[in-house]
Amino acid sequence: DVSGPIRQDPVTAKVSTVAALPEVRDWANAQLRAAAALHPTGVVVDGRDIGTVVFPDAALKVFLTASVLERARRRLAWGRVPWPMQRR
Image 1 (cartoon, rainbow, N blue to C red):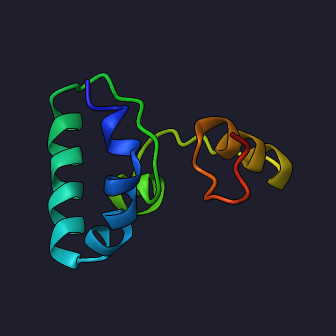
Image 2: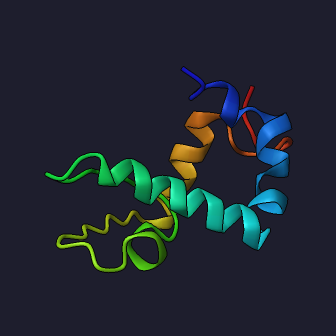
């Protein structure tokens, strides 16, 4: 389970730079499509560009939104607010 380590500062600091590379985005999108193809009854995925770029023709798309206040509360709870704003 890498869900914890991939959200730590050394990784998140580089995500935007790496994800901006067209070759990386194309490869990642192809991997997502290939993984989904293994499940013909469907998959549940979330993330940026999932419904518009990765699976633009999906039969069902659900978009969840949250207020600015709720998003800020979640980031603070997840420890993703940079110091000095973060409570310790």
